[in-house]
Length: 181
Image (cartoon, helix red, strand yellow):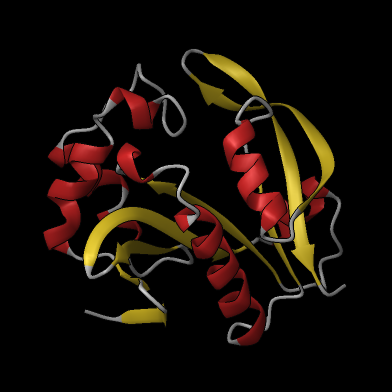
């Protein structure tokens, strides 16, 4: 099990085959899907393997979030491609990472774990991966996530109209960023 980092009771490690049942459980819970993939797109074990395990070894680093040694969520990070940078209006010369995440156990929402996770991940990406900026693109209506990201030092920089398919419609998102440049 490859640890990415530890931060108090929080640990982030790379995704393994044994994590598939947890991801399938979280990604079939309508409370989670409302904010992540959409309630119209629940996952089973096969779909988790197809989407998440297939990413291993790519530019996307897929990780499991642990709290007090128990798996509680998912986070991924990745360097933006030149095309993604151009689409967001960034200079190609900048080292920019994107992140996506969710806490898979709704009973843990609202306890500050997400803020701690985002803060720790941005510190890791800035200090270890030498990111100039870190970007995230929550849907505009996901106020809990936006508040979490703002508490972690992100700021809204650009509205992304009809940016992401969610529950059958293209939804607006915010481009939020944090960084040195």
